[in-house]
Length: 366
Image (cartoon, rainbow, N blue to C red):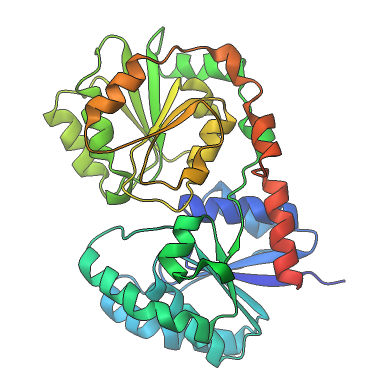
């Protein structure tokens, strides 16, 4: 029996939403093949190569050179694409309602049977925030008209996108727990590669952008003993150059490592001692789940939904004053021995990627 193709939309090959869909595909590939359509140039990597080896098609439109014109042309381009490449199911992933509609409206007009929209965030990122927020609010009421299945990763993400949370189906951002289990040998190797001895390594994972509030992460290090603590940014993003300058201006250049993107986040998490995520907003960040699966002490912004707190070693803190975070960090006793069973606890709480895949399979087949 031929596998059914699902078209995944508004994913560029990077970020938490793409990583989630990539992991879900691994557990659904016996029945489904995920194809990807993106309005810009898709970022190719080991993950995308793996998807293509398993039969996925990746379609690019290169419409982001002039974003205003690109957004105007996208619905027409996508409609024509669907007429030439028919799909029964499209799955639109986005943080803002107008982005969802750019794909949902042409899909509706093209006669797609199941139009799934998936809310992954709870705020506005990037440039032109006021304009984006106005468009988001204006477009939200039309989502029910042009889509028929509504997904969300958390209560905050549901409220942000749908207002009425009752018709949204919640799917946990599960992770590959076995992969993220703490490994002492890996820890020792990565710390050696990073030239770390007995320093306490505090890390954060994510896009270097307004949403993640990287400046706050740097401000924490301005207040910590320089000889005892090191920081590491895992990921890249539009604000990287500005953050590197901010680090240099604050004389924290020897304290903070910019690792960039990696396909082996699980190894870097093993090397860390503390995970910090001072985000201004989130849906339900996959990287915070992965950090807990690795058994790390986690300090997260209280702007993130409380559903993210799965272990007692996770604490939500306000992002008004870095001193609150400094005090919490200074009081933390590092004990790698306690990290080994964390993934088992997360499995009991429903954050195994296999369970998330089963839920999504049901949605695709219903």
